[in-house]
Image 1 (tube, rainbow, N blue to C red):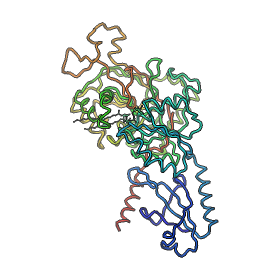
Image 2: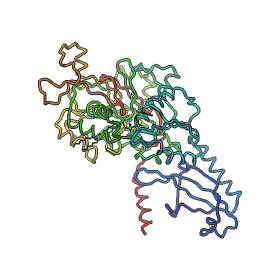
Image 3: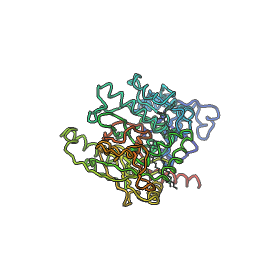
Length: 507
Ligand SMILES: CCCCCCCCCCCCC/C=C/[C@@H](O)[C@H](CO)NC(=O)CCCCCCCCCCCCCCC
Ligand SMILES: Nc1ncnc2c1ncn2[C@@H]1O[C@H](COP(=O)(O)OP(=O)(O)OP(=O)(O)O)[C@@H](O)[C@H]1O
Ligand SMILES: [Ca+2]
């Protein structure tokens, strides 16, 4: 058996884990091919091609191929058969349900899917049912109706908002089918085992970037094809006994809530709306008073100030999950919630950010909390207290460089498994404060008109959507949904290998 590789990546040896094979196909040889190099001596060559994942720089994946030639037709067929059987044994998807948001990000979802993703799915013999959404919540509502057992996964083409829709549809459907009331904040929710794939075509694409390491449709399509599986923590958000939303990336009050609220009016600007509203919100420099109470995540050994980040096969995520399920077996959820301590912090905050993952995205490649874990059953709660505009800018700039964004006296960070927030305004309302001026929405502190103290509430930004209540109760559910991803791979080896091959090419 002889081998000829795609000349673009020609190297002496090529090792491909069978889990990263995309497809195996018999190859029809034309006259020209038969006359290439050593193979021209073969009387009647037979060949098959293996399509596989080629890892490039910065976590980017591409489809490459290698063709094997031999004279013995039977041997060639045996190889094809054996490799196909090997592929069958892996948990690769065969049937997918695809939702495309044609209006997400730069409005290129449909063409991205048709040009870059569909040909790869067809090469990998994946059948698809494709729905192009016609309105917001189309995908979510549809997931309550479809025969979900028919599919090995659901793919969303769009941004974080589109992922959120699909996740709400799937989780909601699971609870409905099991008779679980999502409005009960302590209900033992049923896990969602059907994997979700994200083809990034949105404005932030934070969930894709934080779970794959790059926002690239081809890379994501290949993670789906090879059948990767990455569990994700999900936070449930309630207002008293009413279910509001689930969150996987950012729950942000103050700065990110205000950016979102302003940017929703500017959807026509596309992804640029966040920069415009970001600058505007930065200049307005509003801070908000409130009380935050939280239960520290004692089950995990990690800390938000760790230097190491969550990577493929993360040890901290595995350990934390084991620890939580052990605790659950021993004491049950009730004991855990009732007995453990709550910390209470009152203050004036520019931003309150709770993140279930790093929230890395092209705007901030290390994210809001670089050491947050994808699947450790905890969220990082970041409290940015009232500070000067200049200090807040210094804090923001550190999201874009290597400096530590938590190393400021006005920034505190905690790893938590649940938290609650009430704004000063709602506390005052609840205690029947009769000052009418205070109750008027949007009014600024009358005693200090220039002090930026906004006595109105901000709104919560929940994965890019605003919540209706400012008073919320949040609980993290460990590894509650699964993605077609594998977390961010340690890339030092990749980069070394890449530069080695680049050097070889130069020589
Ligand atoms: C000087 C430059 C500082 C740059 C600081 C950049 C920090 C960027 C951090 C991004 C964090 C994204 C978190 C992800 C949230 C998603 O669940 C959600 C849904 O897609 N996206 C947004 O809410 C969309 C959030 C979009 C946030 C954009 C923030 C832009 C801030 C601009 C501040 C300008 C200050 C300039 C002063 C001269
Ligand atoms: N056909 C449609 N028309 C209007 N809105 C839609 C349609 N399909 C989906 N949506 C809604 O559009 C919202 C935003 O979509 P999406 O997340 O894909 O893009 P984005 O907001 O630009 O990106 P990001 O969420 O990454 O910032 C989603 O919350 C979804 O509910
Ligand atoms: Ca987490």
